[in-house]
Length: 117
Ligand SMILES: Nc1ncnc2c1ncn2[C@@H]1O[C@H](COP(=O)(O)OP(=O)(O)OP(=O)(O)O)[C@@H](O)[C@H]1O
Ligand SMILES: [Mg+2]
Image (tube, rainbow, N blue to C red; front, side, top):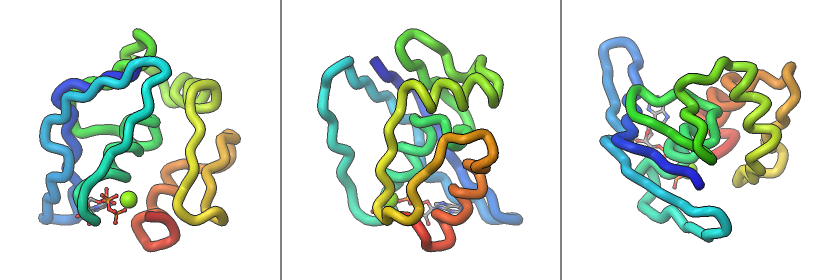
């Protein structure tokens, strides 16, 4: 099961704050298929990045199979990603690699510079 509670994500660039996720309460049970739909820019990718532990939310909780991910170290998150997630990006050449030297944050930055959506 994956669960979020009051999940918030606000991007900050200089003095500009962009609130994207504004308190998302979400539950997906084991075996359940879920589609997250919304207009371009609604925050779908942002939500998936938080849920898959590729990025850190501004506040709120993400609980996966009973583990409160807020308590995890970066290394634990990486291990968790490797064992729990499969991620298919919209553009194959940008597929995320889970190795320790793959710099997921760099991947996210690339995503927001147009390589991935
Ligand atoms: N690093 C960032 N800094 C500032 N704003 C950002 C950043 N990343 C995303 N955003 C903004 O957050 C909002 C949500 O973006 P996101 O990529 O999550 O949308 P999306 O629903 O996945 O859109 P699409 O359907 O086009 O893939 C957009 O307004 C986007 O400009
Ligand atoms: Mg997207």
